[in-house]
Length: 435
Image 1 (cartoon, rainbow, N blue to C red):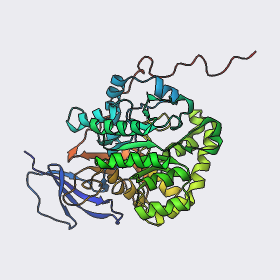
Image 2: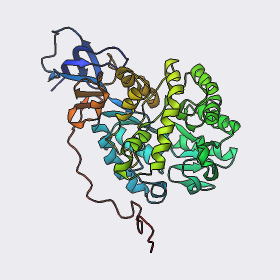
Image 3: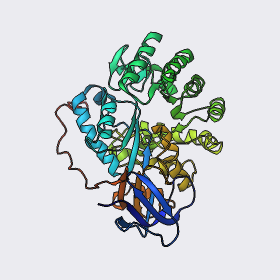
Image 4: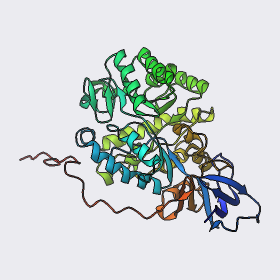
């Protein structure tokens, strides 16, 4: 019986931002038992030895913005009207394995179709299926003017990933219902796309009093609150209300930044979606309007985000994987690349955003770092990501993924040979017939 696993002769990136160093890791059960920097050390004769000469071991990536139940829709119409709960759960299990095999050992699923997120998390934790550890929200709380789907959002009830609340009583009821069902976070779409005003970007769709009520209700039951916020007012009011993490945060102003710094609230910019549309719009046959909008969004927010990072705001990587623009298993590394290229972070700083910092999205302090006593969630890659983070996106260079100290089988799952009936939008045509 093997008592331990020794990862020998590795270059170690510990996730703290410190420079890589050479050493050996000893894993016992599911934890990092010891770390040895000397050339020789006394090892268990029954240990399983893995020689990692020329390779890097680092904490497994943590993706703090991933939609595991969506299955890569091409539009809100497809997402809201072409998904079934049971099938979404089954497919999400396969997609979770793709995420794990890409080097992501944990992810935050902020909002979910139906109750798929909670159920998938529990299935993984129970060992029913293999996937990354998860922290989950339920249905995102919306007002009828909230969200990013315009008139597809109903005036009340639920649709897709959203639960529309119409009164203070409904806010309280929905938050308590989700917490009863077992969510780790409450997510609120603080801003949304209002069709006639869409040229102004997203508008704040909640009052400050409503946001405070939501935070107070969740916090009284020990659950944090995360907000989708685009726009200065939505960021500022979410922070004043007591939100624990901000997704996007674009067009934050100086007043909002001061509050974010004072309260040390983490920021998950999630630029991967925009970056992919910018880089691959033609390949995807995407709208050039979107390309221009997203290029401007990134460019406009580099100055305030740079100032936030330099002031010590905890930055966290999230990929928004789950859409046609960000398919599972392919782009989880991309946010690190954007942080380096657009925000000027060093590769080591970006890695910290995807490991140590991102552990807070999981509500854990025992992952995201290579240190004695931490959980052995590890990624082994051929090469040096402290010099080039893009190697984390090359699946041929990923040699091992350890989850809870276990070496995960990296054999790719069989590819789907067809989409289930009715799963995708079936258009009459791509263009209108003209004479």
